[in-house]
Image 1 (cartoon, helix red, strand yellow):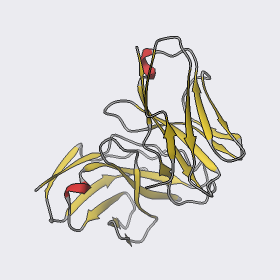
Image 2 (cartoon, rainbow over the protein chains, first blue to last red):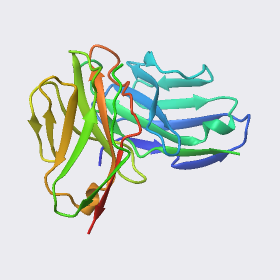
Image 3 (cartoon, chains in turn yellow, orange):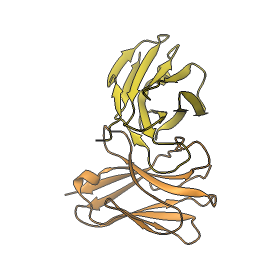
Length: 114
Length: 112
């Protein structure tokens, strides 16, 4: 068990709606990253937060946004949902950016957009 | 970012060793080589990482070629629980650590 928990585990939305996914990092970790994994593909990096500031972003449009809170929990928000946003969304935490070592992933939130 | 080439799939028998290859010929001198695996219906799980020397841990061994253009993940005795997709990921710690670039990986099947 990694200690990274995500909610909800599954959800269904319709095109145009907005969604918020939540992540609780492993204890002692102050860096969180979010990934999108489409069916049959490897995870793709969305962005990373360190000390409540965005600290790196992948090739995703601005309608993908995030927050990190003082207790190091995090949210991923997606506005104006599109059918292609259907995917598994993964959260990963790590101690300090740039220090190496491993990322600890949660089990993900599976989003279906109809 | 270094590109990686891995076989799409491999098969192994239970309790036999498995060698999972990865080609990363464009790797930079400061990139570490990370391996993660993803079991069905789970998030990725760290397996091992190294820079130049071969590495061992309780899960696996990592053999890195002298020119660092390729590496091999070795599972010494495959179990059914090792059936997963294995990803080889060169990573530069100078950049955003959370930005792992996953390819499609190798899907390992283990037969009883």
